Image (cartoon, rainbow, N blue to C red; front, side, top):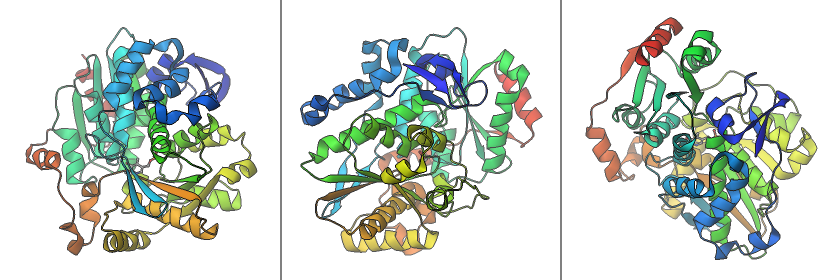
Length: 435
Ligand SMILES: *Cc1c(COP(=O)(O)O)cnc(C)c1O
């Protein structure tokens, strides 16, 4: 499979190059030149295939010659070491739980897949993966890349700006995982990473890539759980609707790609917090990012979502055809907390703040479109509620069980490198670290 840059259709590379580069040289996002269509026969008989075969069939077109089929199957098996349960909340409403991986967030899938790809793809020198995190990405990337040979991982996070669990997930592994505790905000961390990619000397001396969802190796495996959910639903004449709590819009793009390949999904809902650039775009047709606000669903505190251009490309930049497949709604922190408490009382099920927004979006869509009995609504539950326990009301905290893995993690001591938000300091650290 070939990938073009969305800023220059002439710049075309294979999968392995797209993974190593992260972004195209002109900072364009990579996008598949052609989207494969799966046969009706396969889709209709999806129940008869096991999950590994389904994933192999779905993703192999996108990998092309870059990896052998055997390597690819290995990678899939190493990635999918946990389940994606479909938890029934109410008649025709399901939570697709994506948080049963090692760091309790859906990003484990993409991070592990990308790490395994880099391990198999041939390159001559050591590669440095650099990533700025506002919480979940750092842990998933650190865990996915831990002890992968020839890969050095550098995670930048704002000192005091992430939860205790998240910090321990990044800073207690050691080995090839370096945790840089930056005196500054998440925006400072992101700016530092951007500067690393713009710095000629660093680019010449080190091989550096990014593990954010702009990287196709993180993005594409997110298709797996949409296929798995449809397989489990055993679709018998139902309309299927997915609501996705969205920040950078990578997870929802993966779902829309599944539909483009032939997976029977009728509609998507992009559910956001008050960082509502896309809901406003869908309503008024103008893309106008505002300043980013902090919310209790902090993994979605993004006002200029990088993957949205991929969604626009998928719909030929035609907002009218996009509207047929996509609705978008935003919700406040108060609405989020209220629904978490309500769902716990009514169904004895605990949502995390991100999943809660997914659920709210689904309810709003079903209400607006005159809820019909032949609809199945699925929202993505993207993280375990324990990760956001400090955002929950006091009386509610004791209701959330602490997984044993987290109890053990919290006993470990963090090891970090403290740096200011001055780029020169980061640059000399990177150069010394790679001597
Ligand atoms: C990253 C993240 C999201 C947002 O996913 P995108 O692919 O960036 O839209 C939602 N929920 C949680 C818990 C996350 O960590």
